[in-house]
Every structure is written in structure tokens, then in C-alpha cells.
Amino acid sequence: MGSLIRSPSISPISITRPYYRSPKLLGLGRTSYDVCIKRTRLHCTNTSPWEKPSPVTYAPNDDNEGDFLKGATSIFDTLSSDKTNEASLMDIEQVTDTSNEPLPSQLQYFKWPMWVLGPGLLLATGMAPTLWLPTSSIFLGPNIASLLSLTGLDCIFNLGASLFLLMADSSARPKNPREPICSKAPFSYQFWNMVATITGFIIPMAMLFGSQKGLLQPHLPPISFAVLLGPYLLLLSIQMLTEMLIWHWKSPVWLVTPVIYEAYRVLQLMRALKLGTEVTAPVWMVHTIRGLVCWWVLILGVQLMRVAWYAGFTARAPQIQPPAPADII
Image (tube, rainbow, N blue to C red; front, side):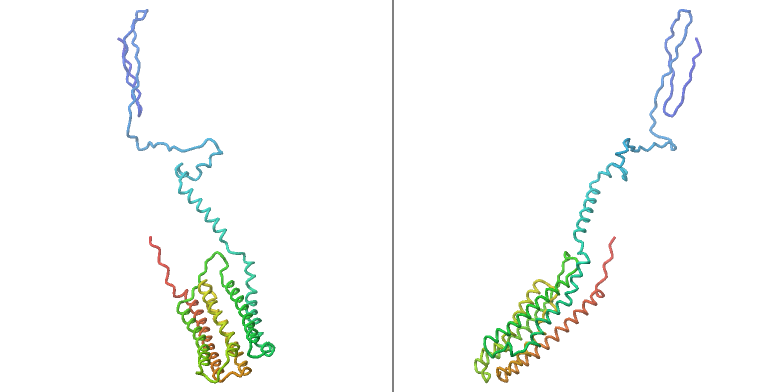
């Protein structure tokens, strides 16, 4: 028999194994053996430390679609709903910020003339008629015509004071109209203001009641009392209504409102003292008007003290604020 030839090939993943086939008799009388080699594959579970699998990367064929996964490590990161929601929220916030932008600085220039126009209205409607208008031209004696003339002068001042308060409120508002502002007067301030106003009502009404009952002599006619203190009581009622509305609206002009009306009230009472000699008012009425002048000068001084206190309080408010708490990690 011929010699057996074995030529195995060794590889990391396959081993060759020979096997024999039956001999065939050829026509030439010689016997030959056909040797075939069959490969058997062995599966290896452990790889060598120097053999590392090649990373599988995504390489798009189309260049136009290359931006689909740009900047993402996997397809799931790209299609994440969180990132999509964050992007939409950022867009919404940007639109909201642009809509909430304050007015242009050019529009703020229109507020500057109010600093002169507002006090000018108070001067024209309050001080000018009282100081320069002759009393004899509007006062014809203790009658209805004189009462209406004096009341008209005070109504003109009230119109100018209302316009002044509107301008002061507009100047005190922030530049951004969408920014909320809430300036609430303290309860103690409201209480003592009402006490001062009610006291200003009670004193003249008590004098009128005493005159009608005969407790005060000589008797003062009601029309003379109306000429002297009628406009005073009317403007005092308007001040009470104005202050209550400002407190309800939480306007920042609640601190200056009583100062405006009380300063003009002193002029009203000084005018009443001048008219008292023309209506031959009794001595007790003259002393009552003088007492009211002193009372409202005292209240005006208290109001100015409150303005000074409020200015000092707002100046030291940033210094007494507690420090912000540290962020807890």
C-alpha cells in the first residue's frame, strides 16, 4: 500500500482531519488511494487579549442625510423627547421674553415734563385763585351765590389735584408696564389718617350744633356757617373718598395725597378767617377756625415726618435684608 500523507493545517479557529476513501482499481492495474481532507470548525468562546473586536460605526451613504445623527452618539439620543421638549420650551421662553420687553427708552422722555406740569397744575388751580384773585369779586355777602363761587374755586383745585395724582402715579410706575407694582399703605397709617379726618369733621359740626341749640352765643346763621366752612367740609369729604380709592387700588401715591389736600386746607381756613370779618362772625367761630388751622398744620407736619421716615426706611431696607440661603447640593 502506498504511504499515507497527512498534512494538517492549524489555525485559531479550524483544524483539518484526513479520512480515507476505498481504493479503486484502475484499468492500468495499479491501485491508488484518494485522500480527502475534511475541515472541522471549532467554536472558541475566549478570545486572546490582543484580539479586540472592531467597533461598529454608522456611516451614512448619502451625504445629504449626514446631519440626521450629527452631534449624537446613538439614534436614541437624537430622538429623545426630553431634548425636543427642552428646545420647544426655550423657544417659547424666548418669544415670551421678547413680548415682555420694556418700552423703548425714547418713550420714557414723555414722563419728564410731568415733573414740572404736575406742580404747575397745583399752582394754577390752587394758589393762584386764592392769592391773586380779589375776594370782593366773588364774595357778595353771606348768600348762596357767594357759597357757590367759593365752592367752584375749591372744585377747580380738586380737578388740578386729581390730575397731579394721576401724573405722579404714572411717573412712579416701572418702565416695563407688564411688571406688577403693589404699594399698600400700612393699616396704622390708614387708621390715624381716618382719625385726623374725622376729628376735622367733628369740631366744626359740634360748633354748629352748639350754635343751633343756643349753647354758643351769639347765634351764627346757617348760611354764614356754610360760607365759612362749607367748602372746607366738602373738600374734606373728597379727600376721604380719594384716599380710600388710592388705598384700594394700591397706588404708590398714597403717601403724598394727604399732604396735597392738607396744604390747601390751610389756605381754605385762612381765607375763612378773612371772610369772617365780612360776615361779622362771632368770636367763638373765629377761635374755632384758628383752632382748625393749628390742627391741620400739626397734621401736615406729621405727614411730612412720615414722608421722611418712609424715605429713610426704603434707604436702609436693602441693608437689613437677610442673606440669601446657600444652595443645598
